[in-house]
Length: 264
Image (cartoon, rainbow, N blue to C red; front, side):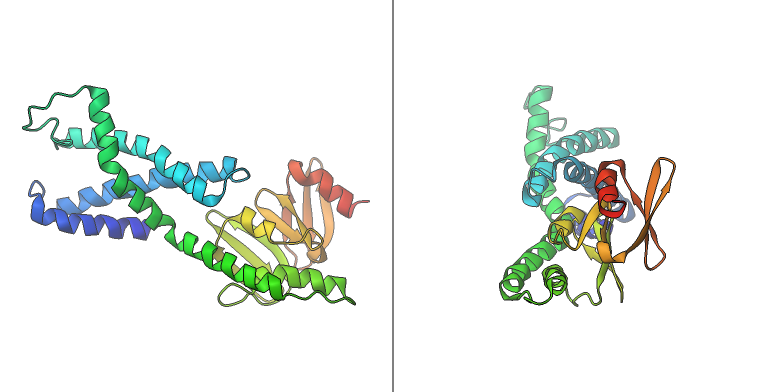
């Protein structure tokens, strides 16, 4: 995302060199890089907050649209203040024009003026994720219709239901699924044969996994029942020790369900 923001800033700066001579070459690039990176940071912070608190009630596209609209306001305030300090005109309202506008009207015009560029940048920042979600959902529709559950092996059928999702990745995930862990914008998938990082939302991955295969035990952790060796309780804290030696924390939210599964 940072690389995307910097590239977008450099593209804008290159065009400004021909139309705006207020800065030198290096200062022009530095100005736009700082401005666009700050804009990207505000948007990402808002999107993360929206995903944390609203992901259960809104689809990703709605979270994205909401985050674009909300982040536009603090970004506009920040860039307006910065440009005023730098002595740059804002929409000509403090330049040579005779147009008289109130502060609220000027800010409204600034919101409108910046909205299209802001929306394009925000979509560019999450474009890899949007493409990944679209490709995965398309593959899931195809794979789900072709998965056949064995009448003689329920365990195999459960595993097939899970691998229908992971087989849609490129390249497909190999081995038996052990655990899934959230890593900021990414998800780490650990199997008996590999560890893979994918750009995906943790909650969406968990939704694809059958309840009979495993369970979520923490805000950022899901484990397969077959991968659990034993629970480890020390005072008020609880962890699960996995067959590969790793320990995974159990949060208070999921502790009762974990105890019912592994201690009764």
